[in-house]
Image (cartoon, rainbow, N blue to C red; front, side, top):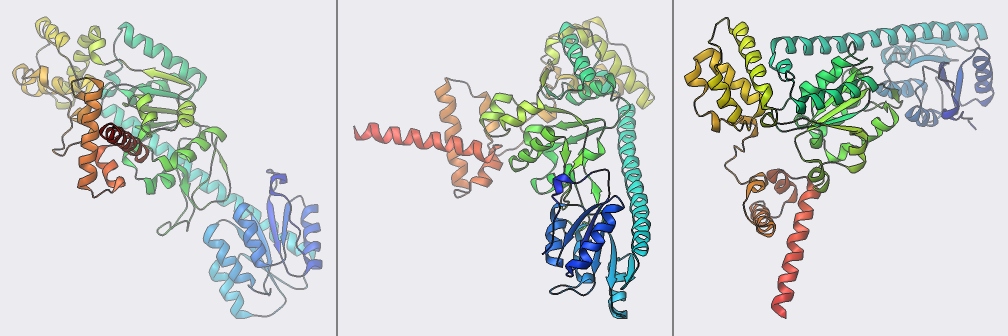
Length: 491
């Protein structure tokens, strides 16, 4: 019988060594020797038992016998290598099997001991492999730190080349000052925050402002557009993966949580996180640990999470886009960015900042913005907010006032348009009429789209811009209305 040490009792400061041997006496001798040397020791009486151990516990070194019933030591090492490329092996054999040694070398077995061996030989082999393992781990951490620093440097260079980001935080209006005061507290205390605002109000810029205003300013700032990551890739992108975790995973890779370790992870469009992944994201926030795809050990992280959305939170929760428990983890505090029409006093400063920026960028000079034009700016609706103002000022610098001001009142930021010629539920946010009339219009559209896709709810939900649970809610309301109508007719 094999004896297993409970994995939750392992000392994290000591190396973990797995001893695999069908000879109970030999197994216990090695266990006693390695425990005396100060290691965590797990044991297994067969390769099959050992595979179950490594599924839940990362072992720095595995000492395995070559000849065992069912599965030999080399085949066992090969299977472990598929999941854990950094685990080291000591292969113990009582036979002069040259073919087995060649096979073992090919799968990456590191040390060989021939029975009978002295205890000192085993300890020397273990010490050698531990030093090799620690060196490789240091190199891995160094590569990942360089990768994090490269990401941070890339972000900083992008900000330098796109001064519209910093310009978006310019202003002294009461509405903006209330936001920046709150942001400074978020930065100081390192708490998670949800940033809300219309398209073009500068949500990522606010996240950058929080990063630059707190103790994490020198640490990484990693931004990710959740809407741009497919459900199939989300887990590996966020949490990383181990070598061999899936087809094409030729080497281990850190995820975005690890890259942001010590700093800030900014989740833009967080309501677009696949619902199947929201539970895993919640667990990472609750435990401050992540587990790579294909891995079997938790990795501690220290990450402040900032998130953003232009959806109304209550609607996002009601329509199944965001779990309530995840919302409460993300939104220790909410920072609500005002639209440009509510901070009109900041327009002159923003316009001049954009003008200066684009003059420098394109190497041209332009005429100053007159008071008359500024008054017109103050009266414009600015549906595209600061991003739209930036576009106007770019045209001002490149083509002059006539082109810049053409149709300014109707100059809508392209990202806020519904460009599809196919009906979408988003259109019905603007239907005029009573609440019941709007609901009827929405239900009619859902019915039409369901017919178009022959009842395929997944395709219909995607077309309508709804989550699957959100579509089901509307379909239930349609069914309830239909049942009520039938009852009335029968009466």
